[in-house]
Image (cartoon, rainbow, N blue to C red; front, side, top):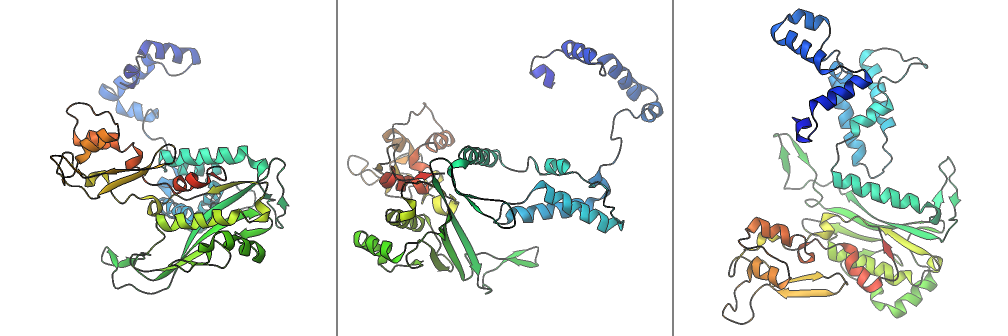
Length: 397
């Protein structure tokens, strides 16, 4: 059926198989007849079809389960150094532990690194794989611009050979207090799982710097004094606690409070106000790796919250977004005058104001698909706002 779908005739396939000396249709047809109306014993004795031997995981299903758990735990760690070779070593150790055999120094691994790499493939979303490939390809193409370290027991800084670029990384870490919340999630009437939104914890948001001079972004006393003369708000006290002369932010989170989009924007604005006075970054390009987490980028409303027609449900008074030029645009969700004054506009009218072409008899689901591609209903990305004010100063990854 697949060959017919791609308009490939069986005769062409048979001719190709004949050229390479493979099993042709006539032979396959003969064995099919033996299987259906002939001697099944003859078919089985000739090892035709079916599974000829058990795989490694068929024989050791417990090792397979432990290997899956090991890979899952390693992938959840903040460090990104998990390799197929680590899974290979783990399976090898478990095999000799289960069987009680003694491994000789010359014995090969029971499951090769190549096989373990195949075990790990196809377990990620396509968009995740594509984004990672884009990021890695970009970084490798510019490796001569970055400050890097040698990979040995005593790492040494390697200075860039082309125009220098300082790489910065945004990182968040949560430290649990050990308290037990009164509200707990139960699974199978037994265990509870930790939710950082339900117990008091300490969360830190850092800007890590890949440069020989410093690990976390800070200013010295002279640089800081110059900075607060121009940006006095940097020295003001607010809900977020900053380490002195730095952009390292921390909060004690409880039930609701968290590093939301607004807080992260303020942290990055603080970074840009301080970058101007940092001597080491002069004559350097700067690139920042930012984790666009859902807690930072989520819109305060969803397309599902809106009705299609005039006078239907509407969660907000206005819709605000950034256009392609970085300018803030705002449209009203309710009519301000006319016969429908005070009523919600509905998605159809909003689509017209956004200059989106809507087909006749468009259904609500189709309308959602069209509007979801517009910036007014896309999640707010951290760097969009910042590029409006600092578009000639910094590059984002």
